[in-house]
Amino acid sequence: MISFERVTKRYPDGTVAVNELSFTAPDGAITVLVGPSGCGKTTSLRMVNRLIEPTEGRIAIDGTDVRARPAAELRRSIGYVIQHAGLFPHRTIVDNIATVPRLLGAERRVARARAHELMELVGLDPALAKRYPHQLSGGQQQRVGVARALAADPPVLLMDEPFSAVDPIVRKGLQEEFLRIQAEFAKTILFVTHDIDEAIKLGDKIAVLREGGVLAQFDSPDRLLSEPADEFVEQFLGRDRGIRRLTFYPSDGLSLLEGPVVASDTPAPSVRDAALAAGTPWLLVVDGERRPLGWANPAALPDRGPVGAARLIGFGHAFVRGTDSLRAALDSAVLSATGWAVGVDGEGRTLGVISQESIGAAIRAAHTQARAERADGAKADEAKADEAKADEAKADEAKADEARADEAEAQAGAGDVAAKSGKQPAERAG
Ligand SMILES: Nc1ncnc2c1ncn2[C@@H]1O[C@H](COP(=O)(O)OP(=O)(O)OP(=O)(O)O)[C@@H](O)[C@H]1O
Ligand SMILES: [Mg+2]
View 1: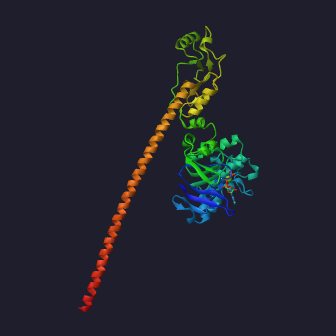
View 2: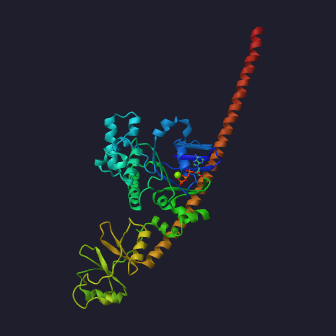
View 3: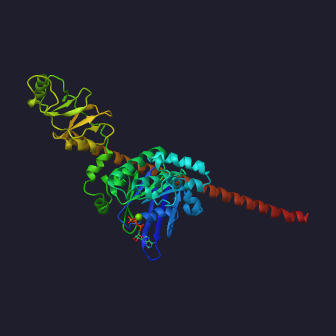
């Protein structure tokens, strides 16, 4: 857990880069700092590993002020990844990755073996081990940067726009690789970006900063998209936040219709008559393994022979029910020429079809449920706050009791002394 407690950074020229910043980055989670250029993201990050010292306030890791530890030792316990990777140009890839373990006293052989393991973990070809950084692509260099930061297995990682110097496709690959690694290692991560989409994709929690280093909102991505705190956050999130929010709603609740799904070798007349009788506007034709082939108009099916796979209308892409979100399901319906989406299982086998309207109804239901959950959450928070207050009151009482006991003891002690001092003269007298 990394906590910022009213942290302010004023540079010598008077620039206030970070202004009374308070939030807590939970253990084992990715907390993203996002905001426009110059809003103090890098400054905030560099105060955690003491490359910059705050002017006011305190940063603590697991409750311990970072200033309580020697800076060099602190930095070895925190992985740090920056844009352009920041690799040592005159060291090979394997030695770059082995840097911190070597600093921590690992034997060269052990450190290099570990480096090779990490190269595999971040998806780097072992053949690159002996190369120098300038002989790698930007995306490969960023992977080396991540591997180097993980080499000493630090509990905390700081990442400053690690993926922003590469093209969108490489970046997407790096993000997915990173989420896979995090799912395995559960590091406590502070991640800086100015890209709100990256923040929403990677963050468990997101801190939105505005110019002047002021915290605009600290929330989960879903909460941020559903309840932006003010106009600045709303603008920063962009116009399609409603659609993006659907990423957080699972598709497993969608009820798919199996009726309109027909195999291409089924006799056409029987299917056609049944579909026309049922008022089914489209039939989804599938192959022998239930993979979708395309849509057929029942009225246009042949009078004899099988349904076949000719003259079908494209279905765009299917969505995987359970794994994909409502956003993917809606996208599938929007891209399908018929306005119907195709749901498949993990193996790509058709489970059923669903109309845009039905997905719309599911979205409205999900919103209603989310609202109810938020209300419950707020109530639970209130109850917790009440409980905490009651505990505090109890603690106060206990303290008061203790104080009374102390006082009583002190008085008793004083009595002793008085008794003793009363005795002494008597003894002396005796
Ligand atoms: N050494 C410095 N002296 C004076 N001002 C500084 C110094 N370093 C940064 N600043 C200022 O502090 C503010 C915050 O800078 P910082 O680098 O933290 O922003 P950032 O959010 O990381 O921006 P970007 O997205 O462009 O990387 C900016 O106004 C910047 O000009
Ligand atoms: Mg920066």
